[in-house]
Structure formats: structure tokens, C-alpha cells
Length: 299
Image 1: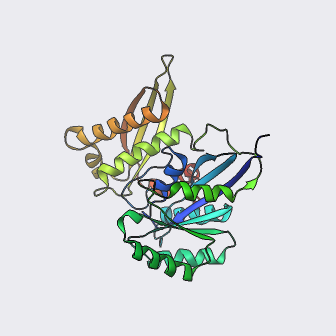
Image 2 (image 1 turned 30 degrees about the vertical axis):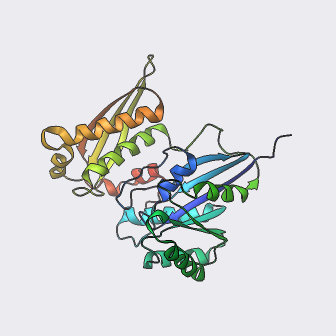
Image 3 (image 1 turned 30 degrees about the horizontal axis):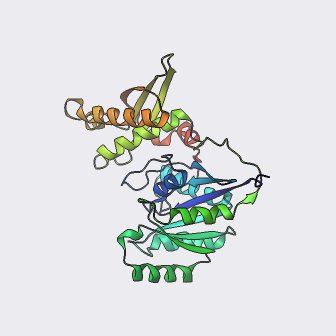
């Protein structure tokens, strides 16, 4: 007789660049959330789905929690806390290299006010001495009520399997919420836009850290199994267009080439990617864009 199915939701929270998206991708065993060295890369809540035996674990990768100043930042932080409130278990990821910062303390204060079980995960342990890790774990444990503490390297996978097994063991009996072969709830159009946004961030992080958005405007499947994807990179000012294009169009060519290659791998089919750059002033205050990202405009 087969084991009864279990299912549950785990929210992964932390300060920007703690390694949340990398950890979720490790849990799922595939890339479902974009990763860059820029803080605040994740804009909305992205769900990655993992199967552990008869248990389906739905991981919610949330935007980093920090002190917001702009509308988009407020909406991102709001989405992170909403993800924590909706979860069965909350995983707080802390960068072991940076330790207990004011931002980490602020998050722990928010966690202590809630009633969700919480697990502390010290990440990037491959860069810190063991005695430092133990002292850090002790300090954080004294500040918050954690059910357990794990030490991992999300980048190379050390400790991730043990953490995932623990989280799966805490899920409740119930039917799976997603098909067995589904890795994310992100629609293909939005996934494609996120891939291109990641590549754009990697090349433009110094000049245009957060001033761009990517839309997938057209998606056509062909009989030969390939797909044509047309996208637009939106920027806020005309003066930014030359930065995105690069000298002789070299920057946008690199972005398109790398995004096309990664999409082909993710979709397991040939991809023909076309990217245009357009100016849309004040796109960051467009309510429709917030709805698309699953964010509250007036957070």
C-alpha cells in the first residue's frame, strides 16, 4: 500500500542576497527563480515545487526584506511578509558571512510576532569557520524561537538534502496541489521574461540596477517544435536606451543570446528570441504591472 500523500507550503525569507533563490532552486532541482549578485532581484513570490517521497513541498521564494523607500520596494517587502503569513513553515535564511545585521534582527522581530513554525538556516557556510558558525547560531537562537537550525551552502548543495527532508517531514497529510511533473507555478511567458531580466541585470547592474522591466508580448509555437518569443525591455528614460543596446548593439545581443540559450534548455525546445527596447516613463507606478507580478500596488 502506497504511503498517504502529504503537502505543505514553506516560505523562504531573509534579507536581500542571503541566497534564498539559490536555495529554492536547489530544493526543486531546477532553476525556477532568477539569481544575480544584485540585491532585490526577486520581485514577486515565486513558487517552486519539490517531491520528497509521497510529500509535495511548495517553496515560496520571496523578495528580500529591507527598509523600503519606493512603491515597488514597499510592494516587494509586503509580498515577502504575506508569503510568510500564508505558509505552514517559515525558513529564515541568514548569510553566515554577514551575521546578525540590523535587517536580520528586524525580520526576527516580525517572525516572533507571528505564530508560524520557523527554521533558521545559516547559508554560505563554506565561507565561514565552524566556530564562527556555532557562535552565530547561538546568538540568533537567543533572539528568536526557532524549531531547528540548519547550516547549508545553497550554492554547492551542502546540507540542503537534510534540510529538505526535515521540512518534508513537517508537512501535513493531504492531496498534492500541483501535478507531479510541475516545477513552478510561474507561467511560461513570465518565466521567459524573468530569464531575460536576469541576463539584463548581469550586464547592466551598474548602470541600470532597477530601472528596467521585461514583458513577453508574443509567443508562437511552430509545427517543427520550436517557439518564437517576442519581448520588450522597458526603461524609464530615452537616455537609458543606449546603455541597454551597448556599442554597436553588442550588449543587447549578448543578453538575447544568453537568454535564448537558457530558455531553450528550460523549455527543452528550440527558441527564437526577439527583444526590442522601449521607453515607458514611470512604468514603476503602473498598477497593471503590480497585478501581473502578484504585488499589492498600495502596500
